[in-house]
Length: 268
Ligand SMILES: Nc1ncnc2c1ncn2[C@@H]1O[C@H](COP(=O)(O)OP(=O)(O)OP(=O)(O)O)[C@@H](O)[C@H]1O
Ligand SMILES: [Mg+2]
Image (cartoon, rainbow, N blue to C red; front, side, top):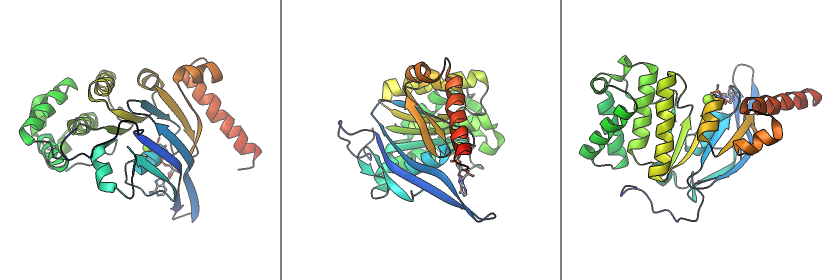
């Protein structure tokens, strides 16, 4: 943890989400899209929580609310006991988000982007650059790629730079929105190994959304299945399988399928 990060008492959970809801107005059809509907979850320190759900089920919306980037319509989010709306700046120092549409200065190089980010988070620069190089090497990005504008890197390579940026700032809560989407199988495995290592070595708490069932099973202590903005179930992969089906994929289809049937019965 760096000097700019607030001191966090040990007994508060890393993340506490209380009854959050978020609706968007669909401009063209003029109807309300209930992206997240009454979700509550407490994530203890050191846990890796997976979020699995079909396209449009609310994963990114939920993660953006956790990351202070979207304001919930109702409900609240606390990161290490700090309300994300009341303590936005402190919370931003305690979290790091990686998403598929990573926000970078695309004309600048990876090195320059990482230097900018570490300045923002108060990590000493020379130290940070060495660590960035180490991390990117571990993730399989050749060092000469650090020196070219990001717009000339492939999506997977940019994704690795985004992950390096998140790791550089010693994040205490990492919010990873599909961090391995678009990566080749070898890179995906490297990123997964790295996530496990970060949890072990940095005492990090991690929320990760994914469409990859094997990844969820490999990384996550608990998995939440989200559909139409609601958690259909949240438990360890083993308990979910004991209850709903032999594989995580079958669990997924059982829960999503049931939700579909309920919706049809309700005439939605
Ligand atoms: N800014 C927005 N304006 C209007 N509707 C939105 C907006 N952001 C999300 N939505 C809608 O909210 C719902 C949930 O979207 P969200 O991006 O959270 O899904 P997701 O689970 O992350 O999907 P994916 O797996 O495709 O990434 C979708 O119906 C989407 O169209
Ligand atoms: Mg998404």
